[in-house]
Image (cartoon, rainbow, N blue to C red; front, side, top):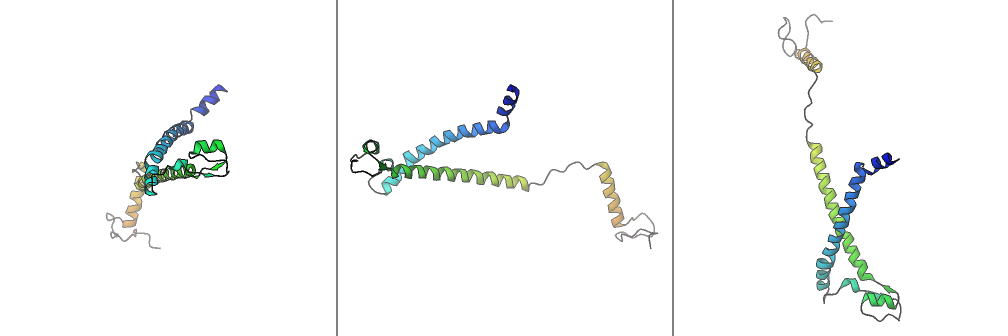
Length: 158
């Protein structure tokens, strides 16, 4: 059973999956930083007043009087649409980057498929058969009664 588990755990697909998850986690942190530190401040500046989207909310109770999202959640239910917008932008960036990666991979795959396959060594018997076929198709100029390219072999008039 230990041997089977080791074979399962060390299969190429499992290792590839583990590497993908680790890279994905690192990429997620990078995207979060890009959105929180670069994109959202610019969007806030464009919408006027440098609004911090992560603190935008609509109170769903009259008990909520706080200005910040963290305090408002402690006071009662809120609709935190700013956090949703931030996550939506995160998702759009990740989806776009993955789209570009897949598009690039497909382009490379198409180029690889377009390459002519390397000529494999043709077996000797196939070469001989091809030569015989070519001689028969072109006619044998060394035999009397044949004309090159006629495709006719003397003595085969039926």
